[in-house]
Image 1 (cartoon, rainbow, N blue to C red):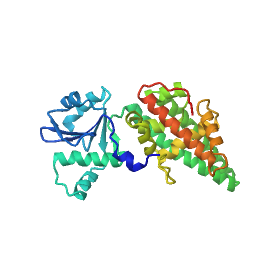
Image 2: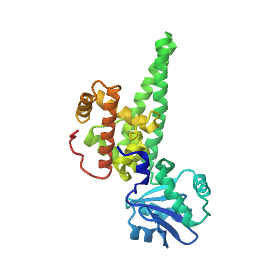
Image 3: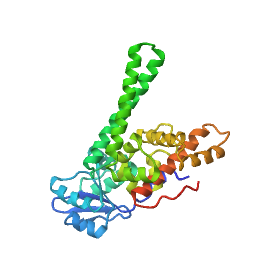
Image 4: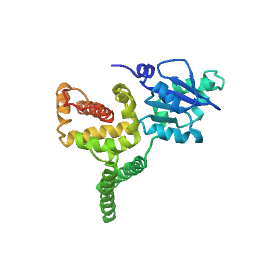
Length: 300
């Protein structure tokens, strides 16, 4: 099993780190150390053929160019917190320069992709993202109200629990309708039979990752490799999606679960170990669909 440190050193195919100078664009590819200089983004795209362009900030005059290039399938990722770039330079004793900025950007990206967010967000993605974030909050309140009902035998507690249940169900239906406007969600629903708020959350928040990262890096991002006790929200939601597929006897994923239940028989946490195997398979399948590839029948 490959550790997290190994993944941080691996190159991500097609990634270019960019810093905008006064009249030039400074670029560094993920598989080289030499900084290249271009006159504009179009020239850079023609020469380097990037799948992903990583930058610290997007000047206003570059917005039209990025919008046009995004239509060709190039993904733009921006650093969420600009202070991290200056902190990285300071930590390594680097003076501020365009060349040093792209080098620091490369280091930050390899260390933690979660520090970056996509600039290629459509109106539909933003809508689904907002609705799924609301669903996460409401689902938690639903759980709390259900627990309160079991300890508080009062009509008001019952009414609150029933209200939360109806609202969460209504929100889930609306999320599904809106998420069908997202190509990857629609394709996943059609080909894999997966749907719902959890899937919509993952795809609206992380669609770029499924298209860009390889299977190993996705497993690290979702904290499946190495195994983590302390999980991020996206990791918990992925496990929830896998567990739901198992409980609903999904024809694709239930057999994988049963296979590993036999393999892990007698081991501690055998059930959840098998669910994690299903989660890994779902990640792989989503990545294949995001890249327009065929999803084959599972072989274990």
